[in-house]
Amino acid sequence: MGYIFFQGSWAWHVKMPSNIKGLVGSCLVIPCTFDYYRDPPRRPNRMVWYRYVKHGYPIVYDDWYPNDVIGIYKRKTCVFTSIGNTTHFSNCLYKSLLQMFPLFTGNMLSRGWSFTTPGIITAMRGSCIIIPCTFTYSISQPADLRVVWYLYQSNGYPPVFDDRENIISKFNSITRVIGSVGERNCSLKIEKLDMSHNQDRLYPWIDKNPITSYHTLGQTFYEKTSFRIFIDHAQEPQLSIIGIPRVGEESTVSCNVQHACISAPPILTLNGIPGKDIIKDNLVSDGIWERTAERTWAVKEEGQSVTCTVSHRGGQKATSELKLNVECPYEEIKMTEWPSEATESVTKNVICVVSYKCKKNKPSIVWNYEDMQSLFKTKEISSNTYEAVSNLTFTARFIPGETSDSETLQIKRS
Image (cartoon, rainbow, N blue to C red; front, side, top):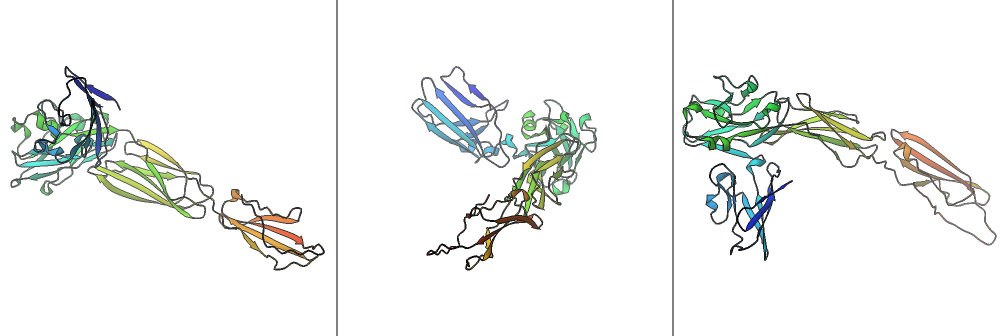
């Protein structure tokens, strides 16, 4: 993230990022510092933020005159300041920023209507995009309304959707309004996006009269109310696992990806584990959907990793891999056939048993009796479950004048 410095003939300069990214519905902190070389102000905590436009100075934040803040930022901005002796710092918090994917409203109050769309949507090349759009009329809604979508340009009104007029070539036969005017829905669907549509700015016109019949709106209206399309490459899907996969138990893997075309969602393919997928589609924000594939399977020793591949309409693909790190549980070691008492010169057996899940995890059992005959064997008692058995054979001998009695064994697990 680069920084930009503002410095003119004044005795101060400002340092702040030249660009910054934010998330839909989240907050955004714009770090900003300034310094006075001479003649510092008496009240350095007086901060005003503006939005850059070609003409005028629309206020984004002003704690002295909060009513002068433009509508889309009103009650959404605040400033944190830290003031030193010679250097003064200001950090501004934008709780919702237009350029960072929120909804915004275009007003045609002089015509009695307004509309709401997202500010930006990112889509995949070759896929489709649905631009959510709703409108309201402050007066009685006319019966013969038309919805037309235009490409923003500094001159002219090139249509990208118009059911009565010809539209520009790169949008020809790929656009249609999917909403009902009677339900105040002006949503636009665009099929087969390509790189020529990248960063195109569109805006709707909802009126019974064509836009060319009005010449007093000025370019500021269209610039402020246009919607922007970004064409991106396929992003890697997000893989996650619920809990720790243990052999012999069930576990669940989840894979999700966001997209902008609910009518032709991407395909998620899971490999590396058996089972069937449960597919879910959820609306994340206006125009952005999330598709999730979940798969539950019985964990086996052989499972090492799982991959998820997303395939978008238009051919774009991306793959993610997740190491499973399968655990091999085992039960507590147990003693069986422990003799209640030993008789001199009579052979007895002591058997030690431990149950474990992975064949490669075979334990070694160590007795604290050295140079005594023992037998070790393993066997599979069920799917993915094994048993290790150690049989110690001994004869009790007593030294004259001494006796002993113990039921303690030293066992080492590995």
